[in-house]
Amino acid sequence: MVEKSSSPADLSGAKVGAVVVGGDFHGLGIMRSLGSRGVPICVVDDEHSIGRYSRYATHFVRAPNLRLEQETVDFLLAMGRRLNLQGWVLFPTRDEHVAMFSRHRCALAAFFRVPTPEWECVKWAWNKWNTYSLAEKLGIPIPKTWCPRTLEDLDAIDASFPIGVKPAVKEDFFYATKAKAWRANNRDELRDLFLKASSHVGSNEILVQEIIPGDGRCQFSSCVLFKNGVAIANMEAQRWRQHPPEFGRAATFVESIDLPEIVEPSLRFLREINYYGLAEVEYKLDHRDGKYKLLDVNARTWGFHALGRPAGVDFSYLLFADQVGEIVGPCRGRAGVGWIRMITDIPTSISDILHGRLNLGAYSDSLKHFSVESVFSPEDIFPSIAEIALLPYLAVKRGF
Image 1 (cartoon, rainbow, N blue to C red):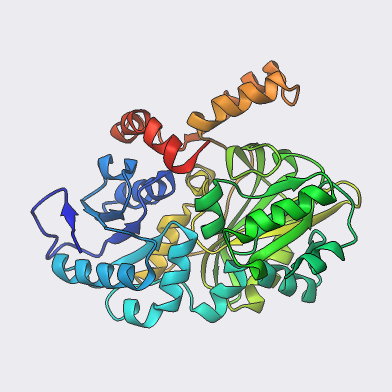
Image 2 (cartoon, rainbow, N blue to C red):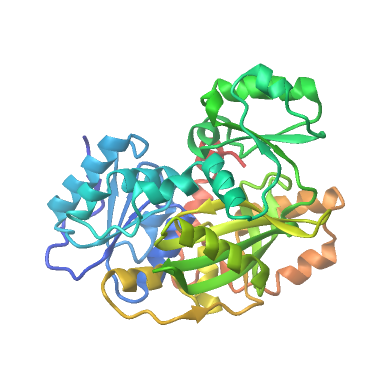
């Protein structure tokens, strides 16, 4: 395997740092959280990413392919030995890396500090069919969901249209389609989309799910650092804007709020699987019955995790501190703090305004009330310049 380094100097003798796997804006948030406190950072990516240009990137290593499981684990261990990163904290930023690190936790933990839990825990978040099955067992509301294996199973589903088609495991589906889910407006479309999805993932990984009415404004998140059955740090948040509007791949504008209704079921779920680490538990409010219905559990830092820092819960640093043995006291995020991803929020907002989903005044007001931008920072300017330069590459790689 070929490894490319931004600097010939190795990191021998440096204090305990963090290995951030993935240098997109998710990883950049981790880097800024830790790097601003003097923690050395090694960022690893197999893409052209903005994180390598951060002032906090002590070292950048280009990996050949971070989607190949055993090869990625071997690469990280070889890199860690070469750079003398023993004891550094390993931060995944993509779901496939969470799965890799959990399945190979013993090998990785012999060299790194690995906050990702074991596979027996992670599998309940990794596969959405597992997530929904456990949620139902625990009495946590979910959207009506089916997992058909054949066209006969599909035809037997008694559901109202429109209805969603989505993967139980996101990665292969997302990389092939650049979509989180598809909308079927009738039975024929449902059959066509099921067959199309089956060409990307196994039929046992395709979910059919009712569409809860409403856009991102109906989506809420319970964000926690969870340990020994309790939340050491927590914050709730509401998506005000997302893209696409119906099946949001990612939030574009988020605000911290107080919403105790989603805290207890989130902790109940995490307690049941004996979870440790950072997690975002996503819900959608169904105005038809007034229930918050669980959509997803992210067993890693989530897209807007950097919102926690100005809200008073710096999630990445709190996890790092716990990993290196510091005492982390209980803390809770304050409401009313905003996060924006301008590069996607601007086109999303223009579309929403043109389609009558957003008025210009509300958009203008929202721009006055955010505390953190996903990439731009006057103290760390080069990643935002790099992101603009990389826009054509990112558009092809991930789509809008």
